[in-house]
Image 1 (cartoon, rainbow, N blue to C red):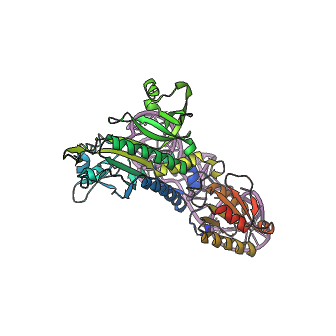
Image 2: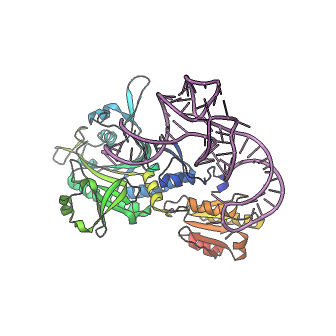
Image 3: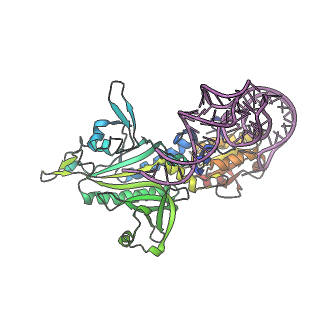
Length: 417
RNA sequence: CGGGGUGUAGUAUAUCGGUAGUAUAUCUGUUUUGGGAACAGAAGGGCAGGGUUCGAUUCCCUGCACCCCGACCA
């Protein structure tokens, strides 16, 4: 994409009403636009990041048998009354609205009820199980205090998978697969080295749930990390009994602040019971389905990446989620440079190498460099009189201080993989 | 929801009970072009409503919005 066609532009000044680093950098770079407290639009660059993250999650969910669908944002009052979660006294984050012809509907703040109610129609026999539907969708929560930029909003985009299993053993096996898939997702998203599988409170059907916590001062949670074991324990369940349970020595843990980027949860029959979600087993008995839920907030994940992967100049996107792999800058106003830069842009595009081409006329080199640092693409390629005279193009990784001059062939072999 | 704070131009800020200033971004022109370039010119602003006052952006009240701390967070 040519930068001259991108309608967003970068800002020099940080927004006054944002403290969090993720919001500051994402707004300055033109990735997101704040509509109101806790509500952000994703601009072209930001959407590309979200799409990359979505693709990673989709691949990993499909890998473990997930089947993608799309559930509606509107929620049926009667359905939620079955699980006793319609009442505002029970759930205080509902957004609800009245229908013109009477009645009331809610906006999704989670999906368990809708899935349990819907799947009842498709689950009759043990032959129908297990089932692993999931979807990406926009979720609404009437938070009394949204904060931390895109990491805790009133509207956010998430992936939720629900597992429907015949029994606890089948559920447990899938739960472990999901846990591994989650680890892969965060590794692929570039934050695996800072993300710990964390034991958290499990509710009435399991001792623990598992959170995926990324160590960051911007986090809202406190966890106790056992670096050697590669696990952590959430403060909410941190006690001697749990330590003994997990075989963790108190002397080996370190207290950290962390961001919860994902969560998996055994639901047991919590929702199967109110929705009478049962199947006939081999002997003709009615058996309740065992459920699990597996969620990831894509905006929060994107915000977390920015929080932990940035420097004083801007964002440092991992290649896997960067809006573009390459940021190509054409410096100077000479016709020769323009021609060569255009040729290179066409060549890279033809080779399916994602490139953002800073073709803006009359913009000083310093400004283009500063923007490239702020926007944070993994590779910066400079086309200028100087680079051409030296024999080609200058390529520099966002993580490096100095670039080097390479020929077109060398450039292609570095970028193609 | 409890506590605290802030609303001035696209963005970031300053001053003042008496013509609202600066930076940046934007537009025009000239020069410039490897780390946010120089000069000249132009355009653009007091959250909303009420009160006090000769006069309110400034002081007071109400509302709304936003931020921070805490509570809450499948």
